[in-house]
Image (cartoon, rainbow, N blue to C red; front, side, top):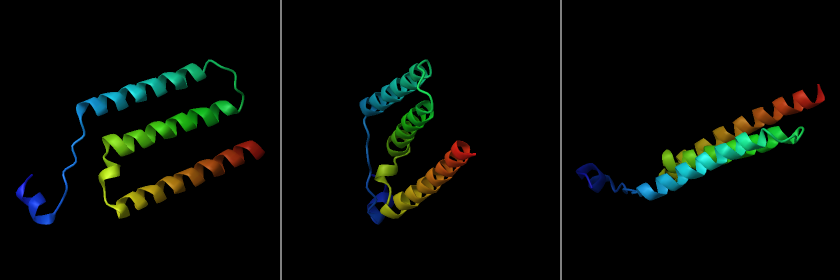
Length: 100
């Protein structure tokens, strides 16, 4: 622990290499699932399934590799608000595409 961390009470979060490797393998598996789904004829559901898998992958990267789960609550709320705004834009685009 550095002197700055001791003075300000910052916590040090250590994530093992094994966990990083497992998350990386999970991301590879989800990427493989996305590629495999491209070969199936799911109609309009293909976009929904691909975006769902991409969202799961994004949450894994944000929480584990970018250490969002160790950040302050306010920072997590700001990140969640940005994600909700992005989701609203995506939904609006799909509604325009579907009913246009």
